[in-house]
Image 1 (cartoon, helix red, strand yellow):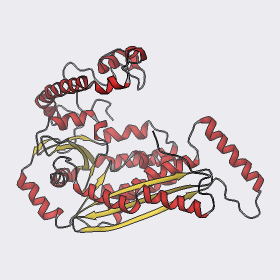
Image 2: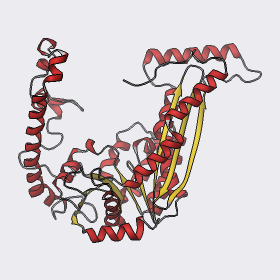
Image 3: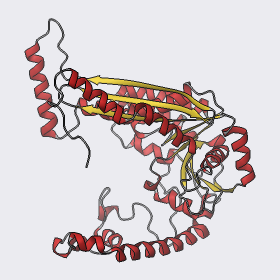
Image 4: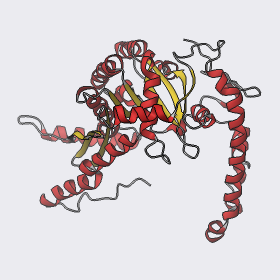
Length: 414
């Protein structure tokens, strides 16, 4: 695989990796940090230069000035990106460009045909999941729920609960020995600051099993012509197994069928702001344009090659990248002048149609510019499997067990 940047840098910019020797792996150089902050880090950390609370709250002028300056600069960057960067997407000299690379302009009439012929006819399903976990010394309880919807109504909702206990005494065993082993594991978990089995279960439920369920429902429970999902089609937690090699095997089998057999899907990035190159391209688009930018294989392969998988598990994941991820492309679209662009993933054979489906659904809420079906599915799944009802159920169980307050704590992340 080529190691070059997916799109060559603009004139005057340094290519990725040019300063690796100075910065180290993943580190930020001091001059880069100062340029971004607008002041030396030592000055930003000097508490003596900070405002008191009331003065900082009243200092809205600097906030307004910084935002205004940033917007002006972004307008200049946008013009430069539209003039130079967009043309690089389908340049004949560009290596490893995806099938259909380039910028496409669509019409309102095209989007209306998709809305009437597919969306409002119930030919597009969307699935969003939610997960919550309650972690105490006696037991970790995790709940995962998913909901499938179309514009003809709910297609179904499914939920599952997982229970993990460090200590499950079995008849005929050594209860004292088992309890000592539990205390030893808990001590290691605390002193090493490394995730234990219970932490892995919480993470597996919150991200891994939820992500798996969302995609499995789109594959196995939807008979719609098109499906819309959230995030990457093959997210990190699935292609790495989230620490479980059995989960890795099952996930890759399901994802292979989703990508290679289902094919008519579009996934919308959950955190698009993390990919500044694609967001810069999206900002350079005018409303009702989309761009097919990259082969996703260039982005996903390093996760497997540089990750922690070894032996047959690594080989299995690389086979999946070669067979399935190689069929994915990543693009970006923009539906409104005052709304943010959206990053999407699709099968290379259906990428243009996928962009039309996503854009047609996104124009229904112009100020958010993301597919309305995803929001609808999210609202339904939260009403059925939201964390408030789940937490109330668990707390009620403790109360009925006569221990309403013994393991109560504020687990809210701050």
